[in-house]
Every structure is written in C-alpha cells, then in structure tokens.
Length: 463
Image 1 (tube, rainbow, N blue to C red):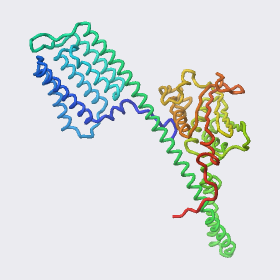
Image 2 (image 1 turned 180 degrees about the vertical axis):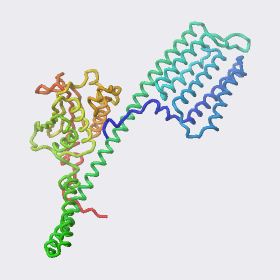
Image 3 (image 1 turned 60 degrees about the vertical axis):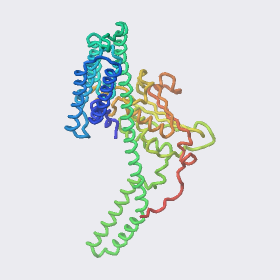
Image 4 (image 1 turned 45 degrees about the vertical axis):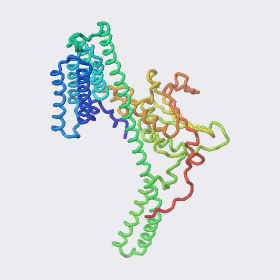
C-alpha cells in the first residue's frame, strides 16, 4: 500500500456514522426536560404560560419521534441532509418554546448551543455554518420579539435591557467560539484516527510480506534435500536409460524440473536464508532493503557507514522489524521525491546508540511547515499540475506521519531539519532536507539488545 491509496474520510462520510436511534433518544431526553420545565414553572412558580402552544410544540417533537421509530429500522443511519434536517428542527422547536416563554429573558436560552455543538462534531462545515447562522438569527429575533413571562400576580418578569443585550452577545460569542473550538478538535481527532488506521494497514502489509518471506525461506531450506534426491535419482536413471530414448527424455524432464524448483525456491528464499536469519540483518542490508523500491526512479541513492566511537568493530546486526523497514522506506521515498539528483543515507553507531540520517539535494522542508512535520493531513491535496509532476506524493503529510509513528514505536527519536539552516550539523554543503533517526542500541541490536535473536540452526518443520 502506498500513500496514494489512503484518503481522509470526508465530513459527509462521518455524518453517515450517526444512527437515527441515537438522535431519537436525545430528542426524548429533550422532550422530558421541556415537559418538566414547563410543569414546574406553571405549577410551582405560578408563571402564566401559553400552555396550549407549548404542549403543541412539544407534541410535534413527540409525533416526529414516534413516526421515526415505527417507519425506519433501528439500524438506520442518517445522511448529511437528514442529520441537518433533524438538528434544524430541534433548533426551531426550541426557539419557538423560548418565544413563548420570554425569549432571552428565559435562562434556558443557553440551550440554543445544543444543536450547534452537535452539528460542529458530526456535520460538514457547510451544514455547521448554516446551523450557526440560523442560531444567531434566531437569538437576535428572540431578543426583540417574544411573549413576556407573567407571574401569578400578573406582573411581568423581565430583566433590564442591558442584560438582554449581554445575553445576546454571550450567546453569539458562545455559538461562534464553541463551534470553532469543537470543529477544530473534532477535525484533528478524525485526521489522527484516519492516519492511525493507515499506519496499521501499512504495518500489517509489511508484516505479511515479512512473514511470507520467512515461510518461503523455511520451505526452501526444508525442500532442499528432497529436491537434491530427485535430481540425483533422475540423473542416474538418465544414464541407465540411454538405450530407451523415450524414458530417457522423461528422466531428463524430471531432472530439469527439479532444477527449476530449486532455482525458484532459492530466489524466493533470497539465496537460502533461514527464518532465524530473516529476523536480523546487518544495518546496511536493512537500509538497502528499505531503499530498494526507489532505486530505479532516476535518482542516485548513496549509502555511507561510519562507526563514531567505541571499541566495537564492524557494523551491528539489527532487528529486521517490519515497522523499521517501512518507516525508513517512507523517509527515503520522501527524499527521492524532492531530491534533484542524489539522496544520501548515512548510518553511524556507537556502543550506546544507532543513528540513520537521510539527506537530499532538493529544496528542503518548507520553513512554515517544518514544525508540524509528522502531523497527518497537514494540508489539502496538491493541485492537478503538481500531482502530475510528483505522482507518488500526495502532499498531505501522511507518509511522514506513518514513518514517524512506526519508527517511534520501535524506540527511535526523529529530528527534521534543513541542511541550509545549520541545525542539522552537516560538515559539507547539502541544501536539502535532513531527517535523523536515532535508536538506543539496546532497542535495535539483534545480538546484545533487549530482544536478541536466537542463534543456531533451525529445527525441521513438523506437522
């Protein structure tokens, strides 16, 4: 799976996640609260209300709920338009009740925020803007037009005009702020959820490929002796059947097919490596494997190895984990995408850590985005012209997010910088992007680390 196969779920798709039954339950709760408030206000506090109209408004909501229960199935999920219609109805019904009970003089006017917050977390931006605009218009109308609240003695229950204006300002600010805040948080949460799903899919694919390679290598190892026996016997038969051309031709065919099976298994098993060996590899081998899909894309990839200090000699043998290979592959792909001609992959190690730096001679990371590298969906998909120039890159930051997440899961720390700003500590002029990945050696070393690979021969596979 490449980054191009991952698409962030749109708002319309997320609106379809809401079940009709959930909205019905929420509306029943609102109906119960409205009935309780009207009953208490009329019987306990003695307020004179237009009970007929109030119960009519509540009755319309009850009828709508009952119709939805009996007409639609329990697993019905609302479309964007249906969701907007239900939330809009609740907003209008609540506004009508407030009109009957004092408008903004009624402390329950704060409930106008309810439908707006629901739209901010579930509906598209367009629907949310429509709901917010409607709520502000209704709040303005309620501040000017409403039926007054009357006490049992006939006096009007009103607050000073300055407080009504304050309620209106507070409602408008709350609608705008709460909607913007919830919208931002929800969008961030959804983007992170999409990106984590993409990361899990990428890791699962790499794990399957690794497991398949181990199975094939083990098969090649175990089938080597039977195939050698078949070839030996067929060769002896071929010598003994020289006087019978037909049978000799069959024996030659058996020998040739045995050779063919041996070659296929050897190629698939990568020259006879067993499954234990597949779980570890020299550092340069892992880097070359990560870069392999991008070697034929018109850019030069150079590998440099260096032991920084210490008494240990020779490059380390590291764990060949799928998340490490896939993470490094994404970083190398990003470098190849942006490089003019050359990508450098530098590796060095000490007794305590192993580090890999990936550099390119391109333009480097955009300065305004360098602090956000590793966040998913940093920006919209690029224009069509730019996509044609770089078809492998979607420009949303998803590939770097996957790489960062997978490598950090293996215990690494990542640093992103540009070679031109001096932050990368480069001793020769390279003007492109620089990504440094550093692991504690104990996390990666396959011999002396926290999870060393068992040494020795494989045991035969038994049923």
